[in-house]
Amino acid sequence: MSRFHQTAIAAALGIAISGFACAGPKAKGPMAFVPIPGSAYAPELTTDPTILTNEPWKIPEGYRQYIVSDESDLDLYVGSDWNDMNTVNETRKRAGRYLYRTHEVRPNSPQDPANSLRRDGGSGGALSVVDLHSGKATELAGRSDWEALDGLVWTPWHSLLFAEESNVAARPDPQYPNACCGLVYEAEIDPLDPTKVIAIEARPLLGAMAHEGIETDAEGNVYVIDEDRKPNGQIYKFVPENYGDLSSGTLYALKVADGKQTGAAEWVKLDLDPQTFNAEVAAKAAGATGYCRPEDLERIAQTLYVALTCEDTTNPLNSNGRGAVLAVSLGKHPKVSYFVAPGANIPHENPAAGITGLRNPDNLADGPDGRLWIVEDNVPSDIWVAEPDRDGDGVSDGVRLFASLKDDGAEGTGIYFGKDPHTLLVNIQHSATGNDKTIAITNRAE
Image 1 (tube, one colour):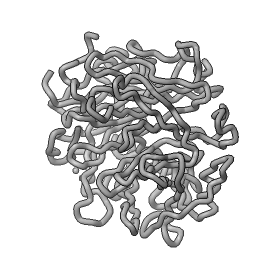
Image 2 (cartoon, one colour):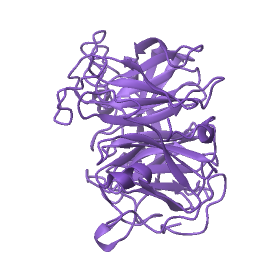
Image 3 (cartoon, rainbow, N blue to C red):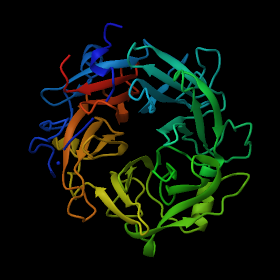
């Protein structure tokens, strides 16, 4: 395809950053940049298809952007679809070549008037894969009972985990018909042909809930979240009996001491119902801490970061805050802090006054320098980069603004770095053009 820059992403995908203000000193590292001065407020916020096709993101000097794949390459659904949510690359020998995506459709919902009908004749959620050498995009798998597929991650044992963001099982899994809510699935990809699936299994012991973010650690534990508002929105840890086998094990939930949102914490064991697998009920019974719409998870070294889309760091009872990013240390004695929070190390957004700040953090990514990249579920959708906590206070040492989406009504999702430390991948969904897409933002020459 003419728009597909094969040489720029033949190996595929990177990072860097720091300050309370949007601007600041130039960030160093492979993704070195001078922060942009502010969000893409009007008149930069637009529905103009020419602008949104060629330059949908407001980005720093020295960077360029281009379409990796859009609905002209692969349009899975007959009607309007909630397209690309999360993005990961193949591991193994072909790491960086194949890009995998979940497609979030909600059968029988107002957002999905076509009832999630796929062009292959089926319906329901789907996975797709893009060959970054040829640009070819294909459907990897789809099932009629998959609802709102969202979270996506590779395991250390080279399987692909993905999950349903559904708090009610409108289309139950036929193998687990009594499961209350969304489930996690594990796909085994053909090592000889990464565009094919060998087998897919549901993993109900990871809990039934409105899943989104999924993460793993070196020990083979899996972390998931319930994307619900307070007093729900718990954070979970699944410990398998045997490494790489998610068919048996124990589910835990994070509990902060003294009923607080931050501070010393523990992972409390849950008594999960073997029929409904209702994680929320089990977590409440164990006194687990609830947050406001945890969405994505990202582990960097021994810290688990959690995007809390509507968290209010000043009022734990508010279920409609501006959001924050949580940091959870993963040692024997977990400690929880607000790593990025409006008014602490980033401004409160005020579009009427032209003040750029954090609002509704959604997806997270680990960059090549260990910095945390954050994209908002907000209009305009901003991409922020947070410095590590080097002084040990649990808070990012500085946050800088990397990009802002000009697409009025759209959001950036599935932010991701692969093998190329100079290139960021990010999806755009709900585009004003009707064409959802995966974009590369890079400082590499063409």
